[in-house]
Image (tube, rainbow, N blue to C red; front, side, top):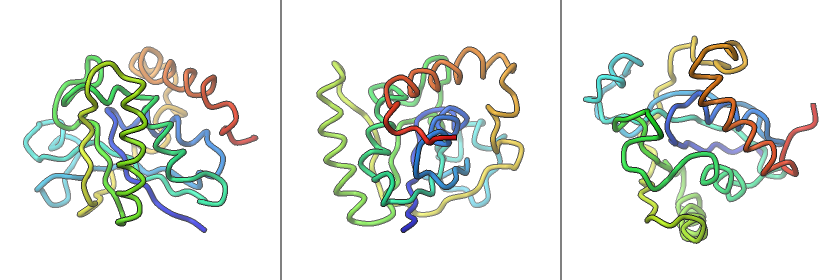
Length: 176
């Protein structure tokens, strides 16, 4: 049974690279959610006036990996305690956000938020709200890390997150 999760945790390249390695993940699409502009572009969102967050939509087989497990990974691969930023990436598009697709996802997300708080000294500021609309990002963002591992941002920011996730979630990795 396939399901979909929509998550924002900083740059979507980081999230995509990690989630693509997990068992049960059927696909990951970068995009934008949570804003007020129809059909936003990367340039619009980076302008910080659309209200959108950079997000990924993760399509997953719920019999192989649960929504709760996806959220466990989510709260490990980004800092959910910083408002509108991840490291040197600053702006509302980099906020920590969970866009629930159902009341059940919202319930599970609230449980996971509470569980994750025990692992952070500062309060978690992750936004939790229903998904209104997902706008797919431009195609050049697809598989960005896999296609651009030498890119300085990928080497310095994305690669360490992927490495951390591989070590921390070895039991959740897909066998390739």
